[in-house]
Length: 124
Image (tube, rainbow, N blue to C red; front, side, top):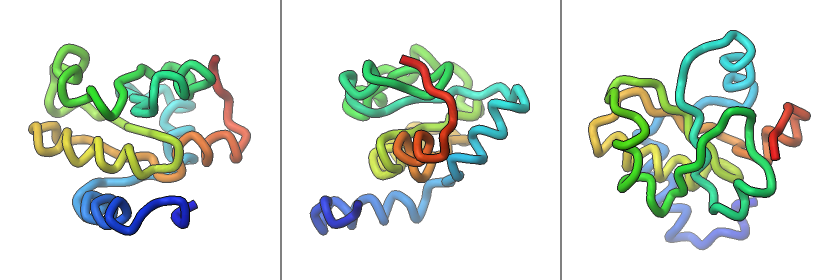
């Protein structure tokens, strides 16, 4: 997948990933199954979200998350798990939320692609 991305984009993603906590798809599934309370945020484009999403996910696209997050997540210590198509955009968005003062932000490595490849349930 990385071959589709330009080197400068990968450079900023790797820089963000050096600061951002990441988890695996199965970690998120286990949290959902355990009934844990957290914000599950899809940062993909609106058209991607409309085609399918993780159960109970809310949509705050990467392009507007910094503008809109404070109206959705008031508690800076709340756990927020972000996902995108594969884990790159979510890492960038997580890094921005850390800069805004959110302290428990996690990027789901593997993203939507990893979730669906694992056969986990989705909503449309």
